[in-house]
Amino acid sequence: MLRDAVRSLAEAKIAPYAAAVDEEARFPREALDALTANDLHAVHVPESYGGAGADALATVIVIEEVARVCASSSLIPAVNKLGSLPVILSGSEELKKKYLGPLAKGDAMFSYCLSEPDAGSDAAGMKTKAVRDGDFYVLNGVKRWITNAGESEFYTVMAVTDPEKRSKGISAFVVEKSDEGVSFGAPEKKLGIKGSPTREVYLDNVRIPADRMIGAEGTGFATAMKTLDHTRITIAAQALGIAQGALDYAKGYVKERKQFGKPVADFQGIQFMLADMAMKIEAARQLTYAAAAKSERVAAGGGEGDLTFQGAAAKCFASDVAMEVTTDAVQLLGGYGYTRDYPVERMMRDAKITQIYEGTNQVQRIVMARNLP
Ligand SMILES: Cc1cc2nc3c(=O)[nH]c(=O)nc-3n(C[C@H](O)[C@H](O)[C@H](O)COP(=O)(O)OP(=O)(O)OC[C@H]3O[C@@H](n4cnc5c(N)ncnc54)[C@H](O)[C@@H]3O)c2cc1C
Image (tube, rainbow, N blue to C red; front, side):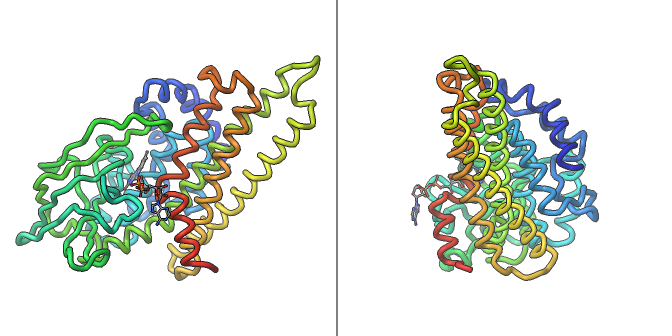
């Protein structure tokens, strides 16, 4: 029922704008409005904080169905989870009440600020600092590649509180857009997900109350990594949705397109491509849903188990599948697939990012190798 409801909404209210959002590289405002009106913008927020209380699998299905028509728009529910999960996992009751309520209501979005210009895969090498000053912390630094920067009201920011301790000297904070000293860089000009704003976040003597720290001092990096264990599964869902959208489009196209006097779908070479695409998508879906079920059990207190492996495997596998399937979808449309008159070239460009963010697929393989089941 959830899938049907999100699919109908996505096709009616999000799909019609997907090409324009990409072409004009503008924020998908229509998608945000439609998702918020239907309580789908941040479904993961627990009911006790005014949210829809969707479990990890339901969240994945929402993201998958939105990504099927517009990958940029799927980053609204996905990054709302990414940005707020540190608060849900490690924040004080006060922080949860203060920040999850507005998120659930649709009054505020949440972003996640880990990466920096010189600290990507090696995120623990960050330079942003938070220095204690009485009942306050003062933050200085530059966060890079921040999804929905400028649009979000709230930012989970990882910053160094003890430079001697490397990853154990990193703490997490909630920073608000309206805090003095917060500003944003120009939007990045990207290959894909052009509707999703990616900007630098500048922190210039941002003075925030000490109780905005998420968890204890020095636990920020651990919280950031624990968050990714859960949210890489949402990127897998995004990849899955993009791939399914490309397959669905290509499947319809090959039945219509005639060459040599018959639909190209009648050629076995084309049928085998479609079969492979569908097979890979289904394998990615099973891995993603199993990881989501694992994520839910862990969130409910069921122990870490092999969630770290599962999250990395789902993200890595599904994103590689998305890249292969969208490339094949362009192939199935021939020359037409290579133009912006058809959606599959956008899907191919959008798929590429899923192999890069929340840790590149090389990093996922490092994570898997360190956590072999
Ligand atoms: C559109 C977009 C949105 C993003 N959104 C966010 C966000 O909201 N919040 C956030 O914090 N970050 C975000 N990121 C950042 C993203 O997570 C990083 O770009 C990513 O982790 C890679 O870091 P890097 O770009 O610095 O690449 P680098 O770390 O410089 O890597 C360069 C290459 O080296 C490889 N490499 C690095 N180390 C190793 C190793 N040990 N072994 C093998 N290969 C290695 C990488 O896989 C890659 O191929 C976003 C990025 C983009 C492009």
